[in-house]
Amino acid sequence: MDDNKIEQYGDELYDCWRTRRTVAPLREREPDITIGDAYRIQERFVARRVAAGETIVGKKIGATSKPVQDFLGVYQPDFGMLTSGMVYREGDTIDLSTLIQPKAEAELAFVLKADLKGPGITAMDVIRATDYVLPCFEIVDSRITDWKIKIQDTVADNASCGVYVLGKTKGDPRRLDITLAGMVLEKNGELFSTGVGAAVQGSPANAVAWLANTLGELGIPFKAGEVILSGSQSALVPVADGDELVCTVGGLGSCRVKFSGRSAA
Image (cartoon, rainbow, N blue to C red):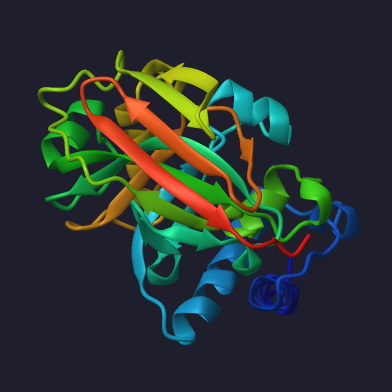
C-alpha cells in the first residue's frame, strides 16, 4: 500500500476517534491490505494523537485468549500503543459518551522498572524487568462499524484501544504465580466469568515476552516506567450506563470501575 493511502486511512481512524464515529472495515475497501500495511496505518493514527498532545505511556497485547479470539474472529495476537489520554484509575467513573462501542476485558498489567528490548526476551526476563503487576480493565473500542473486524482492521485501529483502568493493589510477580492465579469477573454484583493467567498464551509473562520480541524486531524497546497490558483473561463484557465491574485476581487483589452515560453507537 502506498504512503498516501497509509496516511489517508490513519487520518480517517484518527478523525473517527476524535468525532466518535465508525467506518466500514478496511479489508472490505482494500482486499489486498497486509498486516504490515495495517501496522503502518496504526503508526499514523497514533502519531496524530501524539501530535495533538498525548504521550505514549505503554503498550498493549490484544487477541491473546480464546474467548476474545472467538468473538473477534481474530486468531493471532496483535499490539497497540497506550497513550496518556487513555488512563483511568480505580474508583474513576468512565463517561461512555467518550467511546463508541465499548467492551471491557479483565487482565493483568505489568509496570516495568527496567528497559527490555528484543529479540531474545524470555518470560523470566519479563519478570526480572517488572516492578509490579496490577489487576486492570481494558475498555476496548472499535472505530470499525459493528465490530466487523479481521486482524488487519483491529491492527490498523491501534488494536482496538479505548481506555484502561489500573487497580491500586500492587503485586510482585516473583512471589505471585501469575500463571495459575485465578481471576473472577463480576458485573453489577453477579458472576460474569472466571479465568486464569494460563489462558493468555500459557502465561501473561509469555505474552509480554512475545510483544517485547515482536517490537524489538522493529527497533522499538519497552522502557522503564511503561505499562504493558498483557491480554484479556475474561470474555468481553458489554457495558452501559450504571454498570459496575469488579475483577479479582487470586493472591493479588481487585480492580473496580463504574460507567455512566451513553456510548456513541
